[in-house]
Length: 173
Image: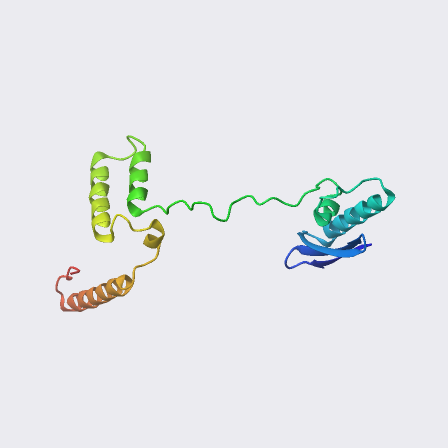
């Protein structure tokens, strides 16, 4: 009456069954072939109960959901979210900094550390912009990595040359 095809790599099984002269199939997660066989047995038992009249499917019920649930779920799965709902705005760099400052535990840092962080925050906001999305901060802006690599390479090469001459290393520009 019912059969299944188990895919161990995907951890899913596709169940095939017939009811009322129609064939249905449904793919469900199953961790093992044994679990898939238990689901198949439930589907068969529900189909037999429907034939015997032990349970009655409501006329507006979704046959697949009803049979797979063992005769307990008579309706189709409901959509949880609206496709046209408002998307919350992405947090900006200023929002992240403001949240950090607001949630900082009093006394967890020295006053001079907090002042230093405030200076750095102001520089970041001035250079990168307050409306920069926090997600964009994770990505390296174009040109930054090349500039940093060039400065580090030039500085280390000049430092090595100065060291070989016995001179002082040069500060990064």
